[in-house]
Length: 119
Length: 105
Image (cartoon, rainbow over all chains, first blue to last red; front, side, top):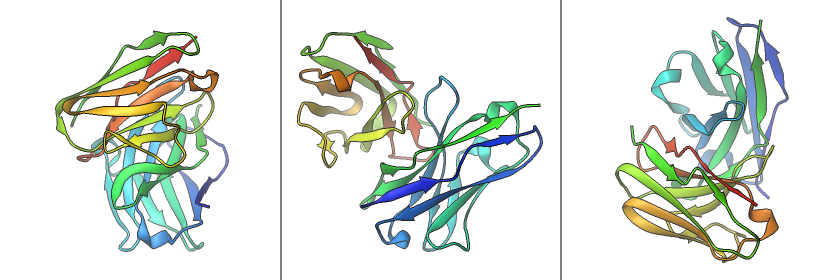
């Protein structure tokens, strides 16, 4: 069965960078896009960006462009999201999610990674 | 970007009752999904393409609408249906979500 398993909680200082991971299994990694979505405490869902595994192409929401980076890692079937120049307002649960078949709804979700930014 | 506005913000109902949730888009969209989120859990896909139930979703959940006005209906609420529901458009990037509707007892 399809699973998206994410790395654990990160506690960071403002200005630092952190890399979180999302390991996919149960399907062919290169056949589906992967999205990142974040959710600040007590808030709604916010789309971060999309990664296309075959070519490694990315598309970010404008507010994250230049500060967040999605990339495929050396570990098989693993995607990373690096968050740079962290601010307190980046405190959120970050979810990875696999696209649907031939479409960009979010069919399978990871369990989420909490990134907490505080001085 | 496309703004999605959900109403009401909170819906207070009892088990067995019918729930009707609304999602209005600032521009016409074709690709719209609905998700359910329980407290402390990841969202779960319920509906895509406005009206297609995802795998394993009970038939008491139904989606309808087109253009700018969409509806999620839960025909008879079960205790496990009390949660927050989000609509999402994936017609254009950036993908956007509504602010959510909480269905509570």
